[in-house]
Image (tube, rainbow, N blue to C red; front, side, top):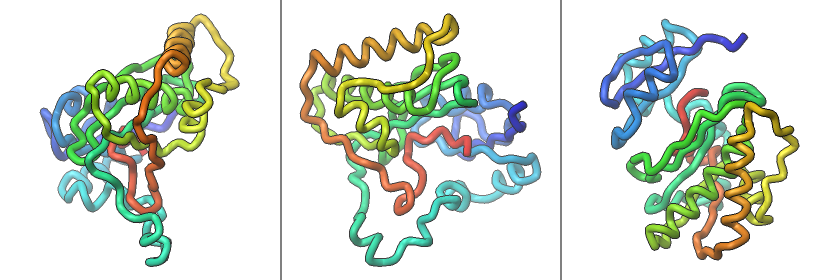
Length: 210
């Protein structure tokens, strides 16, 4: 059984501490600059809510272990871009993905949850969705992903998952086929860039459930 989590919303349609991701999601969806994160205990969540978002998000990365030379080599992210990410409860489990403005965290698209999916599939679909979104907008913005696997799948034009198709995830596999078809039939000039979590913290499209 999955451990219970508590969700803090510092900036959203409604702020506070919530015990359900679905409730949290309701309060942050379509809210520009939403700020939220999950915690393992009610006490930790309530303490965090009294503090600042910046004090809790990205603090669990290995950013502080990087040397000045490494940070200089990596550089800073291009803020005029979009970022994509996926979240999955279980492996396989309920999966969803989304794309946001890297600088403002304004949500451009969100899909799911899909039954019996994986995080890698979600990351792949998020990237392809992002590529299609940018091409439709005739935008030359770059797109960030923190998944090397998804980036390689997109480069090769194929979702190389080992997940087996079942009645529960057939809809998800239909989306995979559509994504692969799009990659085969379309060209794009969008630069797909790796989000350097160790240097920059969590990707802006992160669902905040860590």
